[in-house]
Amino acid sequence: MGNPVDNKFTWVIKNFCSVSSKPIYSDQFLIGGYKWRILAYPKKRDGHQCFCLDLELVDCEFLPSGWRSVVKISFTVVNYFSKKLSSQIALKHLFTKKERSKGLSLIHLSELTDKKRGFLVDGEVEIVAQIDVRETDHKLHGSKDYDMEMAYLNGMATTFIINKEPNDDDKAGLVNVKGFQVLPSQLGIVNRIFEKHPETALECCTKNQELRASYINVIFSLIKMLYKGAQEHSTHDLSDAEGALAYMKNVGFKLDWLEKKLDEVKEIKKKCERVTEMQQELHDLMNKHTNVSILLEKEKLEIKNASAPDLSFSDVI
Image 1: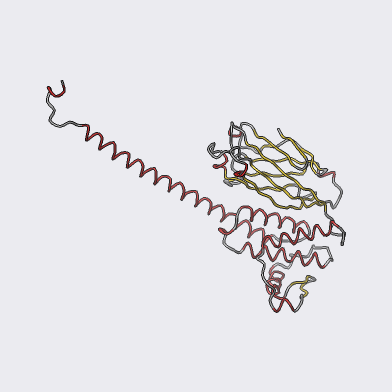
Image 2 (image 1 turned 120 degrees about the horizontal axis):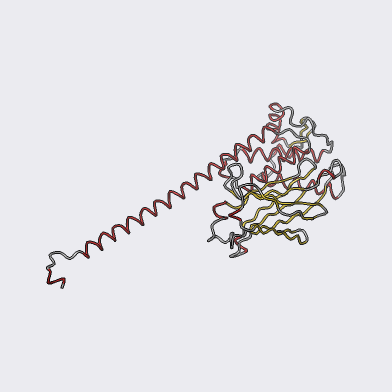
């Protein structure tokens, strides 16, 4: 059913169109010293029109208390016609004993099951998962793991925020807000966050100021991203945002208000995708109508021309 090689796992789903609407599991496989499995949704998942996959950590109850690992995940749905046409998505996610799975949306189901597209051949769909496991411990300041977590946080921030030159206020230095060091240009928004949602950082236990500053930057970046128009976000963007929120919750932040906004954006995104689909369907129908109209007129003309007026019996004989 699957074949793990190094940090890659290949899973071929046979008789894809015949499988039930229930999710299906791959075989378990070992990568990075941990057991994993993939969960696939051959049909719609919670109304999603896209083919969805989950990466799930197996036997996590045997992991030590406080275990956590930043995992780089890449899913590819292979195109049999050309590797360049394969559908791929990649992101980083923080796995813990509680946060044991991560879901991703890939190719649209209608495109996946269209035999002319090259993803479904002889009833088979091939999925390649690439997993890079790196354990972290935020208590190990100055260690490789600490540097890795800082890089992960900074990577999340730069994923969502548009880089800009620091203004004059920012050059003046950082400002302390509720034990967090923030840029003066962020002061108004950060104050508003703590005023409207005082529970936001009550359970953030780390005292390391670099990490605390990075946490605030991630929240600030998520806000800037989510309050843009839903049309501006790709499925990959929203998946990254979901992963970042899960990470922030795992380190002690209460971000229900941001999760609610993310759900709203995802719902609008689904409606936008549906409108696009309907517009395409309408366009196809109009083209079909035009083609049928042309064919109809052509047939009527041929019938008219084939009708020989005033034929006598002798003409026929």
